[in-house]
Image 1: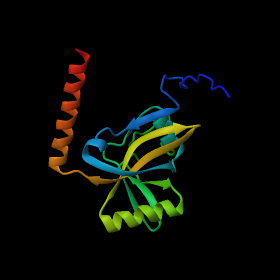
Image 2: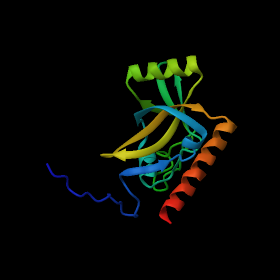
Image 3: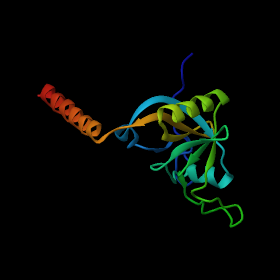
Image 4: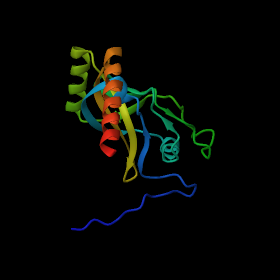
Length: 164
Protein backbone atom coordinates (compact mmCIF):
# COMPACT_ATOMS: atom_id res chain seq x y z
CA UNK A 1 0.00 0.00 0.00
CA UNK A 2 1.49 3.35 -1.03
CA UNK A 3 1.73 6.12 1.50
CA UNK A 4 0.29 9.50 0.64
CA UNK A 5 2.44 12.57 1.00
CA UNK A 6 0.94 14.38 3.93
CA UNK A 7 1.49 18.03 4.59
CA UNK A 8 1.81 19.34 8.12
CA UNK A 9 -1.49 20.72 9.34
CA UNK A 10 -1.41 24.43 10.07
CA UNK A 11 -3.91 26.40 12.16
CA UNK A 12 -5.36 29.79 11.24
CA UNK A 13 -2.53 31.69 12.93
CA UNK A 14 0.18 29.67 11.14
CA UNK A 15 1.22 27.37 14.00
CA UNK A 16 1.61 23.65 13.38
CA UNK A 17 -1.18 21.48 14.79
CA UNK A 18 0.62 18.14 14.49
CA UNK A 19 4.19 16.94 14.86
CA UNK A 20 6.83 17.99 17.37
CA UNK A 21 5.86 20.98 19.49
CA UNK A 22 8.89 21.14 21.83
CA UNK A 23 12.20 19.36 22.28
CA UNK A 24 14.75 19.31 25.08
CA UNK A 25 18.09 19.23 23.27
CA UNK A 26 20.18 19.34 26.47
CA UNK A 27 18.95 15.89 27.56
CA UNK A 28 21.41 13.95 25.39
CA UNK A 29 24.29 16.12 26.60
CA UNK A 30 23.47 15.96 30.32
CA UNK A 31 22.28 12.34 30.66
CA UNK A 32 23.00 8.77 29.56
CA UNK A 33 19.61 7.66 28.16
CA UNK A 34 18.68 4.08 29.04
CA UNK A 35 15.03 3.31 28.19
CA UNK A 36 12.50 5.30 26.16
CA UNK A 37 8.74 5.52 26.76
CA UNK A 38 5.80 7.30 25.16
CA UNK A 39 3.09 8.70 27.43
CA UNK A 40 -0.15 10.56 26.92
CA UNK A 41 -0.89 13.78 28.78
CA UNK A 42 -4.01 14.75 30.73
CA UNK A 43 -4.60 18.38 29.74
CA UNK A 44 -7.22 21.09 30.01
CA UNK A 45 -8.67 22.68 26.87
CA UNK A 46 -6.60 25.87 27.13
CA UNK A 47 -3.42 23.81 27.60
CA UNK A 48 -3.77 21.78 24.41
CA UNK A 49 -4.54 24.93 22.44
CA UNK A 50 -1.45 26.62 23.83
CA UNK A 51 0.66 23.54 22.98
CA UNK A 52 -0.67 23.58 19.42
CA UNK A 53 0.52 27.19 19.22
CA UNK A 54 3.98 25.97 20.27
CA UNK A 55 3.96 27.79 23.61
CA UNK A 56 5.51 25.09 25.77
CA UNK A 57 8.88 24.87 27.52
CA UNK A 58 10.18 21.49 28.73
CA UNK A 59 13.80 22.46 29.43
CA UNK A 60 13.39 21.90 33.20
CA UNK A 61 10.72 19.18 33.06
CA UNK A 62 11.01 15.76 34.66
CA UNK A 63 8.71 12.93 35.72
CA UNK A 64 7.81 12.05 39.31
CA UNK A 65 6.18 8.74 40.27
CA UNK A 66 3.95 8.93 43.36
CA UNK A 67 1.15 6.66 44.58
CA UNK A 68 1.25 4.51 41.44
CA UNK A 69 0.83 7.51 39.11
CA UNK A 70 3.32 9.35 36.91
CA UNK A 71 3.30 13.16 36.92
CA UNK A 72 4.97 15.65 34.58
CA UNK A 73 6.61 18.31 36.75
CA UNK A 74 8.01 21.75 35.79
CA UNK A 75 6.70 21.80 32.22
CA UNK A 76 5.69 25.37 31.43
CA UNK A 77 2.64 25.75 29.18
CA UNK A 78 1.92 29.43 28.54
CA UNK A 79 -1.59 30.72 29.24
CA UNK A 80 -3.84 30.65 26.17
CA UNK A 81 -4.71 34.25 25.34
CA UNK A 82 -8.12 33.54 23.81
CA UNK A 83 -9.34 31.59 26.86
CA UNK A 84 -11.50 33.40 29.38
CA UNK A 85 -10.51 34.15 32.95
CA UNK A 86 -12.42 31.17 34.35
CA UNK A 87 -11.18 28.58 31.86
CA UNK A 88 -7.49 29.55 32.10
CA UNK A 89 -4.93 27.05 33.39
CA UNK A 90 -2.01 27.37 35.79
CA UNK A 91 1.20 27.38 33.67
CA UNK A 92 3.41 25.23 35.94
CA UNK A 93 0.89 22.78 37.39
CA UNK A 94 1.71 19.08 37.57
CA UNK A 95 0.11 17.10 34.75
CA UNK A 96 -0.76 13.42 34.91
CA UNK A 97 0.93 11.08 32.44
CA UNK A 98 -0.95 8.17 30.91
CA UNK A 99 1.21 5.05 31.12
CA UNK A 100 0.44 1.37 31.63
CA UNK A 101 0.60 0.11 35.22
CA UNK A 102 3.59 -2.15 34.48
CA UNK A 103 5.48 0.78 32.90
CA UNK A 104 4.88 2.93 35.99
CA UNK A 105 6.03 0.12 38.31
CA UNK A 106 9.11 -0.46 36.13
CA UNK A 107 10.00 3.24 36.31
CA UNK A 108 9.36 3.42 40.06
CA UNK A 109 11.57 0.40 40.71
CA UNK A 110 14.48 1.68 38.62
CA UNK A 111 14.24 5.17 40.13
CA UNK A 112 14.33 3.87 43.71
CA UNK A 113 16.89 1.07 43.30
CA UNK A 114 19.38 2.57 40.85
CA UNK A 115 18.93 6.29 41.64
CA UNK A 116 17.92 7.15 38.09
CA UNK A 117 15.72 9.98 36.85
CA UNK A 118 13.05 10.24 34.19
CA UNK A 119 13.59 13.14 31.77
CA UNK A 120 11.38 14.60 29.04
CA UNK A 121 12.83 14.52 25.52
CA UNK A 122 10.02 16.01 23.45
CA UNK A 123 6.32 16.85 23.28
CA UNK A 124 4.44 16.11 20.08
CA UNK A 125 0.92 15.76 18.73
CA UNK A 126 -0.35 12.62 17.01
CA UNK A 127 -3.88 12.61 15.57
CA UNK A 128 -4.89 15.49 17.82
CA UNK A 129 -3.54 13.91 21.02
CA UNK A 130 -0.57 15.34 22.92
CA UNK A 131 2.17 12.80 23.68
CA UNK A 132 5.42 13.01 25.63
CA UNK A 133 8.61 11.09 24.84
CA UNK A 134 10.29 10.35 28.17
CA UNK A 135 13.49 8.47 28.99
CA UNK A 136 14.94 6.74 31.99
CA UNK A 137 18.34 8.38 32.41
CA UNK A 138 21.49 8.51 34.48
CA UNK A 139 23.20 11.88 34.90
CA UNK A 140 26.58 12.38 33.28
CA UNK A 141 29.56 13.54 35.26
CA UNK A 142 31.60 16.56 34.20
CA UNK A 143 34.28 14.27 32.71
CA UNK A 144 31.67 12.46 30.64
CA UNK A 145 30.47 15.74 29.19
CA UNK A 146 34.02 16.70 28.23
CA UNK A 147 34.43 13.32 26.54
CA UNK A 148 31.22 13.91 24.56
CA UNK A 149 32.48 17.29 23.37
CA UNK A 150 35.89 15.82 22.46
CA UNK A 151 34.34 12.93 20.49
CA UNK A 152 31.99 15.30 18.63
CA UNK A 153 34.91 17.57 17.68
CA UNK A 154 36.94 14.61 16.43
CA UNK A 155 34.04 13.35 14.29
CA UNK A 156 33.58 16.84 12.83
CA UNK A 157 37.30 17.07 11.97
CA UNK A 158 37.25 13.64 10.31
CA UNK A 159 34.20 14.58 8.25
CA UNK A 160 35.96 17.77 7.10
CA UNK A 161 39.07 15.81 6.12
CA UNK A 162 37.02 13.31 4.13
CA UNK A 163 35.24 16.08 2.22
CA UNK A 164 38.58 17.56 1.07
